[in-house]
Length: 91
Image (cartoon, rainbow, N blue to C red; front, side):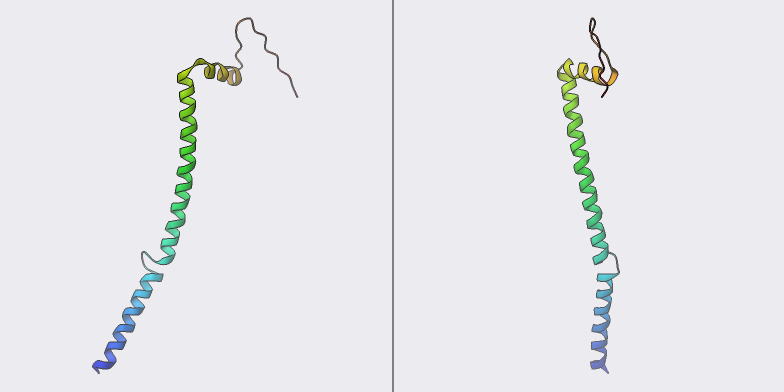
């Protein structure tokens, strides 16, 4: 009876391990899902880093001189200098 019990126990352990591999926590599908989520988060981080670098450059330009301030005032607010005439051409 002891010789029949050993293969049964080994098969049961094998099934248990396979079940954990395919169904349990840390299973192959679960790990793949986490990898996809990580790739999405890394892509989001990369885009946020690009945005941060662009904003940092803009802040640096604003700190360095008034040219950027003047350009923003002209383009976004439609401001003109004294004794200057604004002409808008419609296309």
